[in-house]
Image (tube, rainbow, N blue to C red; front, side, top):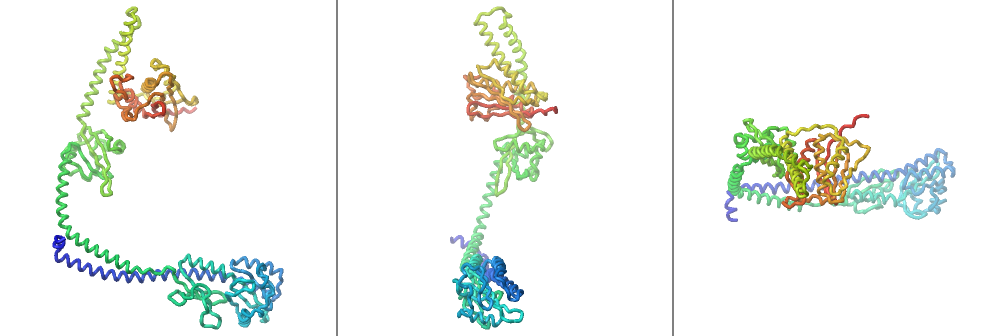
Length: 639
């Protein structure tokens, strides 16, 4: 800790003190502004809520009052002569137009003679207003003033409390005719008002001012105290009444000044501590940078001494870094490849998508041709890995010069081809001679001699088949094998294969499953397709138990015809699956293996099918195996 404080200089301390003073001033200014903003937001909320509640209350109350005025116009138009039958038609229509009307009454001469609806209001029928001491003074004042008025809440004769809108009527000669009264249901209005206020998160109160009285009366809805604090006050425009509304938010303005002050002062303290630590860490950073530079130099020395070329690119393939071996391999000056696309190192840069597909997994390798700066080409093997650093994706390319390996493979293939050609001539002569001897050209042979010659003849045939397989492998690898692609009927070819393979059968039943309404024409080389069918059928028969069934199934989908060879053998183990179509690969490779074979049949079949634009594969069955290949279907000739 002593070392920490001693590391800070005078100008460091002066900077910290100035920053502390500025932070205190800014904090207090911000808190004051925040308090004003909070109150302003609360006031805006109250104003917006008050406008909505005022409009709702005025609308709900004025609609029934305007309907009362409409009824009064009808009575005036009839000269004060109203017919009960007409009222029975008119009043239900008026009541239905306003949901808060409890009833509408018509009182000629201040006596209620018509009420709708009558149900629940029977006690008010034939009511004479002067007989109501608690209501008559107000009614008399309404008649005397000749102005309609909304009074209430009033306790009704028929029970309950409500607002009553009373409209005095005077016939055309200005003589008093009577009163039309509309009783407004107070409970539904108050429920609607309370629900709306709760949705707006506000509290409201209502009070009214009596005519001729400059002061407002008692509060008839809400808390009276709202009219005596800092609540927002609004006058309501309700016909025949002078009401005032008080509104205040139920969510009081939160005083966050203490929390903000504490948080800002803590942030200031942390900032000053951090700044102090930055001053102290400056020297440490210099030391760390020196160590990092040493580590980078060491890592660069390691990668530069690797024989293989190592290239790092971004997502777009632009070279970001390369080791020294890369520049040596391609003959470029040091650091001259940065910023260029790595495909320029290929002899065929148009194959970039093929390379990406072939190296989608780190263990996969692509073999192609590289190009040096002097335009000379060489064989290379390329593998690719994905890197992620600081939320950025990169590619790591590992390139190896395989010119020597290719030369060795070429020599090996040439040796195999030469030996195979040289072996074929004497083997043909031996095979023919043995066949003649077995056929009786040397006269009758005893049984042991016949058995020995037959065994030699069979072994000679196997050796001849091995030579043929080796030659096919060499021709496929060198690209010298020719293909004559044309439509081939699959069914006759498969039937011929079954006939040829019959000698290998161990009482197995060979069945072809196909749709007899389809021609099953394949685009293929007939000879090579027959070779593939014989290989797969021979495998199925070889590994199937006696008296089992081998099924050849034909299906067609998406312009491709699939031929499946399904046996009931033991199947291929999971460990051997990756090597299934490799050359010389056999699941049972021991000297004492049960089934003989060269291990070339599946590899040759795969190469032949792929050369004919098809694909070959294997599927595991619950009991047995399924080898299949798919080839394009030949276009159907128009009939």
